[in-house]
Amino acid sequence: MKKEINLNKSVYDLVTQFPEIKEIMVSIGFDNITKPGMLQTAGRVMTLPKGCRMKEIPLEKVIEEFEKHGFTVYQ
Image 1 (cartoon, helix red, strand yellow):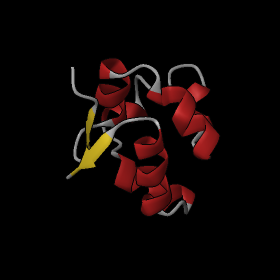
Image 2: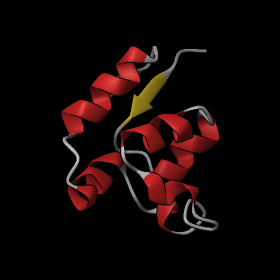
Image 3: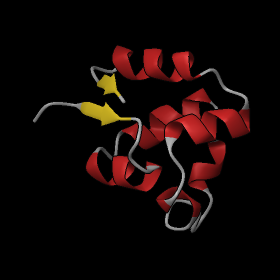
C-alpha cells in the first residue's frame, strides 16, 4: 500500500489509516494528540494545515518530516 497523506483528510482519518504517524506528529510538536479522547473528538474535524496554524508549526516542516518517513504528501 502506498503511503500517501492527503492534507485535506482529518487527523483522525490519517492516524486510523497510518497509526505510525501519531508518533511522528508528537515528535513535531502535536503533543495534544496523545491526550485521551483528543483524537476521537477534535481529531475528527482537525486537518494538518489547521493544526499547524493553531500550534504555529510550519506546514513545510510537517511535510518534510513525513517525507523522511517514506510518505508522499499532497493536497
